[in-house]
Length: 181
Picture 1: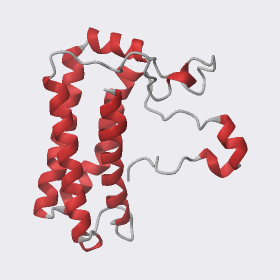
Picture 2: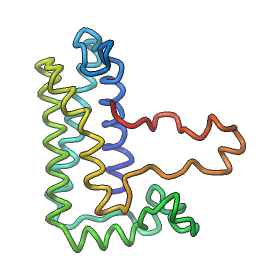
Picture 3: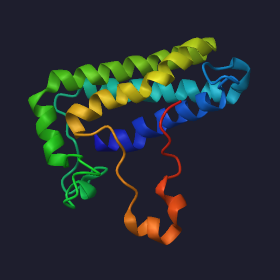
Picture 4: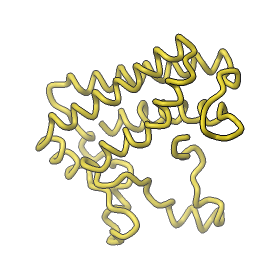
């Protein structure tokens, strides 16, 4: 799961958000198809396919493993520094226990993500801007719907204090971690 999230799900949803964010109309309440380049339609299709395929792969796995032995999941280090007020993510062991206790719910969330990825893929092939808007604007809720029950939070971890001190206040917003459109 950790590898899928960090190497597939997060980068692909970010691609979809970035492309759709650049395509907003002047009012910010819809997308303009002409603002999506032919290359971006291809990138949307690839991102949707990768999301769909990885979610389906995990949903069909006989057993889901959160992380390899010794692998740290995002936020795990921060979750055990004692400051639960700013970060309350579970450890890999806790996430594994939650998934093992509720596998059907986890699979349901994977299927929801697979359906969203497939919708983006199909919309990109048709250049269906309305569907791209509808699906991309719901990704945050789709992701949060799974993060909350299994990971313990739907918020990103705080920016590492040592990096914030080294780079100043502007470092408090990590590059590439924008939240959907």
